[in-house]
Length: 153
Image 1 (cartoon, rainbow, N blue to C red):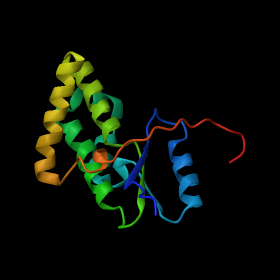
Image 2 (cartoon, helix red, strand yellow):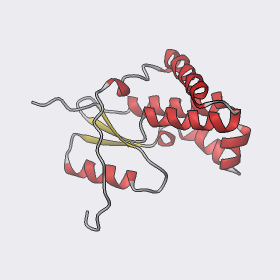
Image 3 (cartoon, rainbow, N blue to C red):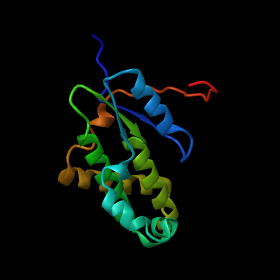
Image 4 (cartoon, rainbow, N blue to C red):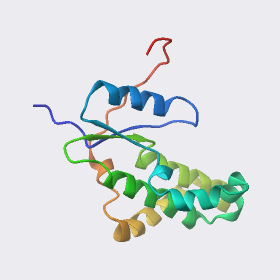
């Protein structure tokens, strides 16, 4: 039997159909397990920061450490929710979450991209000591696929 990955992620901007496509995939094979977005697995902190002006919190009030920890904590909890023998379907995977943290660090902390990436990577490694192996989903060979929108499901 062909080995299936532990995780498949769809990455892209908000409101582009990632969740819709993941749910369609899940309906086609019982071993697919939709796991959704990071905020769904750690809802309390996300609800707290979403009160009021979410964008202002993200870009002005939060620290890069706080944002990165929030993203990574949700990712670890989401990955832990995957049932054995199933492929977890992720709305944005770890590499995308690190890219988001890095881009935010560039904007907020006015760092060069390389320096911001190194900063986010350090946060990732520190968080992994406390929350589990964050690299496991990323250690699976990546296969890229391009999805195109069609009128029919």
